[in-house]
Length: 587
Image (cartoon, rainbow, N blue to C red; front, side, top):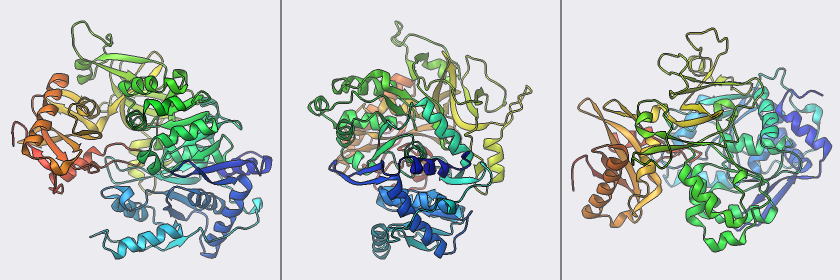
């Protein structure tokens, strides 16, 4: 039978090997707490599907999935697909969601006109206690019913009752963007998108029945949902699943688990590699065996050469082979990957980058001038796909020595944003001017270039800070200052533009350890270190420095800094405890 929906792959997996473990969930201590075979997962999902039937839900309805990490989420996801209900996974509202997390949750519920919210009994009780205690002041909860699915029990599996999409273009899941630059939007991933992604992943990442994956990626983020959970459902791997909160608290858990189970596949954004280096010891690394690891996918945020070098160097003693490192580029609107297996790194003159040009130079320059080092994200391997570098203003193709916006067309390009036809047309169906290319492209909003047959990503277009005609990438400014002073927390730095007297200037928000003890003298010291580094690396003569407590800098579900949210908080005066050292001022 030809697969028309993503659940057809799970059904084939179920019929082929019903008792083989697909998912194993690992707790904070590194102990396996639950293991689900395809049959056990299907029986539990049938129970939740019966609940949806009893509630009167029908194919095409939308459901918001709000669960802590664990098996209940996977069960509810499969149940929705069985019923033809379109699931939308979101970050649970509460402390884990960070500042404003409940607002993003509420916006998603309203945006997709959810029929209901599916959750677990434990989380629902915590939510009720938080509401009763006034933990969400000023937030109006959506008038939508919550339903606990963990008490639904099991039912016999009946494949003939499973929903089969009439066409591959039918919506399968809604993936809400993280809201790093705007209100969250629901990306419509179709069954055809997901089938094409699963097929490409199996080839590109060398997946199969013998693949052993370990993932701490959030279940509500496209990287974790599609490339871990749905990939395991489709038969591409056996997955050991860790809580991202447990990983952040104790990164050693990731490596302990991989060493214990002989992981052959894992994945992490750049910040996860950095955290692993900072929060593990040489003695721990020497005890782990990462020799079986064949693929370590790194994606979801800019990949920093310095981070990669430190990570591969520090974990060489664990048996980690450099050739398993797999830089990859992707985004939700591309369901999810665009390119993979980067093997090149290039150094580009920093002054040229500021002017939008690509001028190759040695990494260590004899003249002492600064070079930006970029990690390649590989070639374009998906059948029938095309990726182009386009001038975002003129919509004309860029010459090979120019940086432009990355435009993508492939079988995995999402159908659009839910109930946003104009935004969908502008962002996912863009036409290249100046030639007769018949394709319609996804405008990624990311800037980059091609070199040596690979795609290189330089940054987000909306995060470029323009000072006196020169382009400065926020990521580059943050990388320069995150270790310029011992009080700065490396993962809590955000650079953004401010407008003063009609001119754009720079602000840098830094989280400071032991913030309570930071007086005016200490604040001046941090600000001076930040400005000194910006002047040396980027020739930025002045900047406003904002010191904030740990955990203040807003981030997306994948750990990316929400720079526009940082600017909004600063300009609205909502950073009540912040210490601001204005440009050119000592406190």
